[in-house]
Length: 397
Image (cartoon, rainbow, N blue to C red; front, top):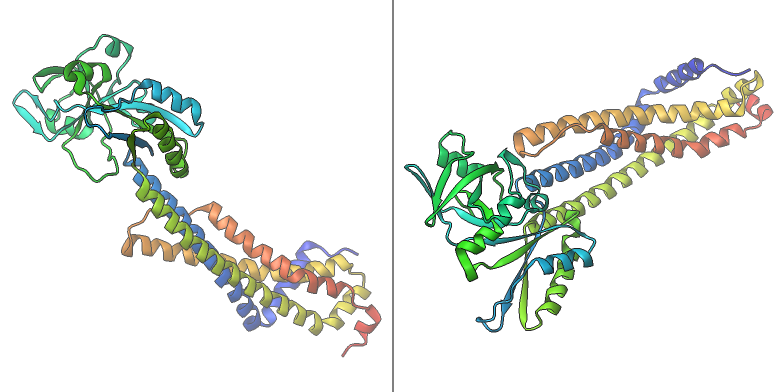
């Protein structure tokens, strides 16, 4: 005769409630393990979120090669041919744009307002794709701007705010280095990761920059991989590429995310250490559950015999002991997840300012680990209970 699930659950509750101290200590062992695992998962999530926030403040991760010639009068030139060759050679590259510093742009004037310390740059059409920047107003350069050498420019949000004092900058003419430029768009203000500060950035097309600077226009590539983690390997490949391209020169590569990679590696090492501690704690909790289940089977041998005699199946006997272990694991795990959540929330708002949100995925992983420990630890003791001889069990005092 099959025992209803409700009856199994009731018997589980009755058995656990008979000895609150033993059940509580067993749940505490699970609590410690799940708390460590949950804290580790939260730290990993916060680390990812913090790095993503820092990345959002910068252009997408990129490499920029710089060539230093042995003969200062023979400066090697990087051009679109190099970009195409790199893109073809290395599938790790997501996008490459050509960029250069425009020395004639250092101050920008609009009407009576002048902003000093402006960074001037020339870019290619795929600049937004490479950097991941977003246009806030107006538009980006198009083929007509490039092919026509048009005197148009794009300002970043910082420069636009300072220069135009709340006016709409689109279509306004500004003056810089003796040139009149029309603002056609405003884009995000971002850091290049170097820590250098400027009062804003003004972009012009690569072709217009060559027109106003002539032979003094030195370009470099902005090489963006698909993922941040690909930067170190890609750095080696790009360096080898340019060493072969310019064997008589020294090649230097700048990347805007080396500090974030180091931070990510440090956090990963710390997270692995915490995860090991969590797994050890979970294993200790599992040993506790196994011992308690073995003791429970020995103490209830006669009860097992009676239940088997009145029709309980081996599976039902086994299910009861496993259910007891699962109940203890769920209780310890749930308390751990809730406790770690509130502790993390307090720490990240009052002690250390870090981005944190409760993750149902992390909570689910932690609870799954708790249940797995409960089932795994109680399985063999519960299996042993099903093999008890009914006659022997009934004779047990």
